[in-house]
Image (cartoon, rainbow, N blue to C red; front, side, top):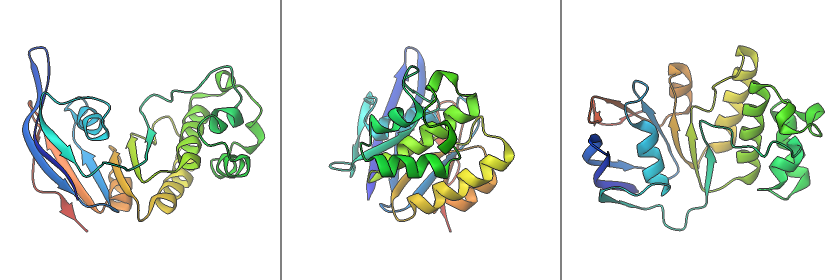
Length: 200
């Protein structure tokens, strides 16, 4: 299990969440839902160890190799699509495979700066999947994708992360149902859980 106990996080006078305690099964996908700005990304970053809480603990992530799909694509603009993947996953065959899977095989030599918004998003997804990892942190991975590409990427993410620990933030109800082994709906200020994580 991955457990958060008594988590509190504040930014100045704003309390994002206070004394929050949750449990997540390893090898399953936990989906965080709720209005924009409620605090889902902050919770994700605290669980991932990218931010420190003001109080409380996160246990169970020790030794797990994390892979990230951030809201921002975080690409290296002057490097090609292929080299952006190779920076984190130096297996060329694997990099080419995932570029093909997201429909970027023909754009592999283009610099990231020359790609459209949707193509950059697909590149960030290919990079995370090529890197792999034991736990995936995915913050709105479908943003900027057109409908046809979105459906393809949904299935790819589902297939590639089955059996791994996943934390997913999404506003797409269908994607939440497809991916989620348990859904955690949040609301309020400070952020609170509306009900216990509902499992399939």
